[in-house]
Amino acid sequence: MRDDALAIFHAGLGAVNPAEAVKRHVTYGDGHLKAGDRSYDLSSFESVYVVGAGKAAARMAQGVEELLGPRLAAGVVSVKYGHAVPLKIVRVHEAGHPIPDDAGVGATEELIRLLRKTGDRDLVLCLLSGGGSALWVSPAEGITLQDKRETTRALLKCGTTICEMNAIRKHISRIKGGRLAQLASPSTLLVLILSDVVGDDLESIASGPTVPDSSTFADCLGILKRYGVIDRIPPAIRAYLEQGASGTKEETPKARDPAFARTQNVIIGSNIQAIQAARDKAVELGYNSFILSSFVEGETREVAKVHAAIAKEIRCTGHPVAAPACVISGGETTVTIRGRGKGGRNQEFALGAAIALDGWQGIVVLSGATDGTDGPTDAAGALADGESVPRARVMGLAAQACLGENDSYHFFHQLGDLLITGPTFTNVMDLRLVLVG
Image (spheres, rainbow, N blue to C red):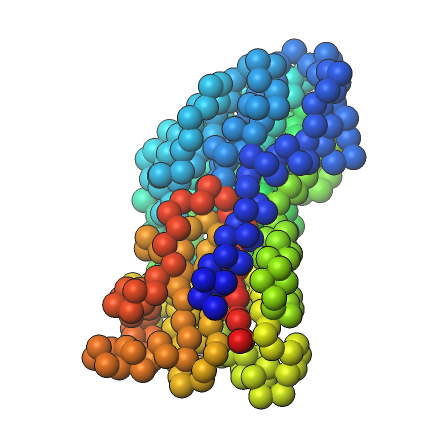
C-alpha cells in the first residue's frame, strides 16, 4: 500500500508537468499563436517577450521556447534556488523563497526594465506559478527589503491563508496586485498560469500581478489585527498601509483600469488536474477511488483528524466508498506555529493522522507538496499508518509531544518515512492520499 501511495502521488505530479502544460494549452502554427479562446497573429507584433516568476517558471519558459523558438526576442524569469533549468533565450534568475532576498530584487528590476521597453506592437508572454509572490520583489516607496522579509516571517508564523498573505503583499509592492499589467501596457499581455491556490483565484496566484485587485488597504489592516500581529509588523509597512487606508497612497488597480483591456489570463494547470490523474492511477491499481475535495483549507492537524475519521468509517462501515479505497484531497492547509520544531504542513498532516490512526491496521496516509518542498525542509511530506506511533514509541519518540512542538520532520526522519522528491519544477498545492486496504 505504501508503494501504491507513492505511485499514485507521482501520477498526480506527472499530470502537471509545466512544459507539457504549456504545450497542451497553447499552439503555434501558420503564424498564429492560440491560447484559450483567442488567436494572436504574430505578424502583427514586432517582438515577443517572455517574463515569469514562480517555482515552475523555468519549466514553463522551456515549453514556450520549444513552441516559439527564434520568434522570441528576449525574456527573464525568476525561480526559487535549485529550480533553474538551461534555456536558450530566456534568462533565469534564482532567488529566495519564501523569504525574499536581494537576488529577487535584482531579478525584478531587470523585469521592470524589460517591460518599460515594450510598446503597443509587442506581445508579452507572462508565466506565473506558485512562489511568484516571494520571487518578484519590488517594495513600494519608503519600504525596504528587510521590512518585507520581517512581514513575511510574521505572516507565515501566525497562520494566515495564502490569500490573506498575498493581499498584504500586493499593497506593499510595485508589481503585484495588477501592477505588472500596468507596467506592460500598452503591449498585449498573454498570461499562462499554473495555479497553487484554492479555487484557482487569479487574484491570489503569485499575488495577482496581471489581474484587477479587489482587496484594499483597509482589508490588509483588518487581516493584521485579526491575527494579532499588527504590532509585529515593521513601522514603515504599518504606516504605509494606514496611509493607504486613509486615501493618501494609490490603491492597487481595479477592474476598470485600461491596462487589463489587452490582457488575457489562461490557467494551464491546477490542483484538480493532479487529483484526477491520481484518481485514475488509484483505479488502475485496483482501488475504489473517491475525490474528497480540491478546496481543503484550515488548520492542518484538524484537517488530519477529519481524514483519519473518514478512513475509520471506510474500515468499519464501507462509507463513503468501499475498501479497498483511495480517498484523495487537495488544496492547502495552514500551520499555526506554536513550538520550536521543524516541519511543514504536509508532514504535520501525516503526524496528526498517525496519532488519530494509532493501532488501526490496513490504512496508509501520504501527504505531499507538489513542488517537492514542505515548509523549510528538504521533504515534500511524509507517509504514515497505524504502526507509525507504536514504532516511534519504541524509539523513544512521543508523537503528541512532537506535534506540540511542530516537530514532524524529526519524527518522520527517525522513522524513515519522509517523502523526498527533490525539486519537482511544478506547484499546484498539496496532494493527500488515504488508502484503506
